[in-house]
Length: 132
Image 1 (cartoon, one colour):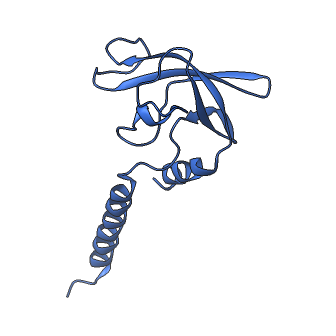
Image 2 (cartoon, helix red, strand yellow):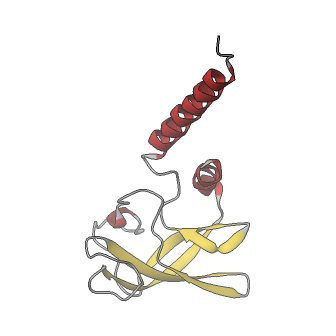
Image 3 (cartoon, rainbow, N blue to C red):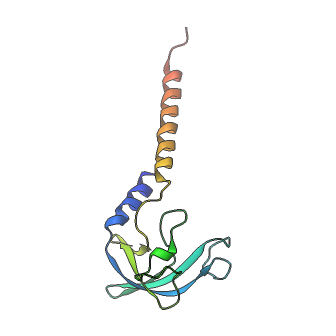
């Protein structure tokens, strides 16, 4: 959990480059390996140094807004050949997002982890007490 949170927060400082949209559409229309049909997906290609990468990861949030990633004033879904900024992990250039930053629900999972830890601590403490 802590590793996931660290990666999500670190994405705010990842370097960026320009990517080209290869495909954009709903899950049911595209063959990008995602299940379901209710999310808009974007397949994009970008280059870091001499290496070229392809990815379809928009962001860490549950439903990132695909309309706000374009460098235009027009709000629309990205289409083939559009140019978008992509933020890639400096420790693994193949990991990238179009919208950096942690998921909105990350704090909930952090709270759940704290509560579960406290429960385990309490159970361990009770089990250590001698029975009289």
